Length: 216
Image (cartoon, rainbow, N blue to C red):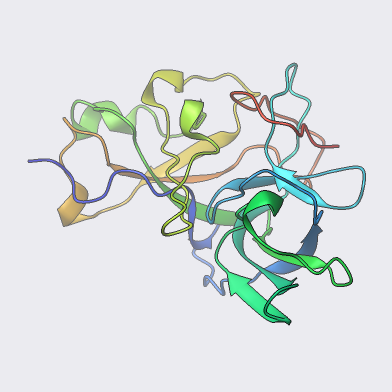
């Protein structure tokens, strides 16, 4: 039987050490002329200009993740009022009053744990368990999402699972979820943390696919 949910980006679920998940976020800014769509539950990186963007194409382990986008707020130049959205549609899709900052709210605790769906079969639980403590990427789904819901459609790339240190995600567990327990299908919920965090240490990761911004 296929799993109920199969791709939803990185959803915060708790902290390392069973700490409570406060859904705590930090406010940053997005450039008002940023044309990239940044979906809720997708990885963000800090830029030298003091703003954030989607994780871009890099090589050689040159990117540090700031966290995962939870939502944005900007002033609409037509409606003359603030607007709250769960994602940034890109400057070409909204009317922004540039007299005000575009605020981004990011889950940026380096100890944050996330739930992410597998993008393919893991065969069975015993096989899936061998992926715990390995690293992985979101593959080509890293920056995809729905413009209807604003939610990311990223999923953990099963084919990328390896010990490679520059992969952006560290797998730390498997969630018990009766509705998503078919290991022969995509959608097994895995517990991960960001492998290279801007707020913790100097390790860096390689991003996936093409994007405009590569981070600091």
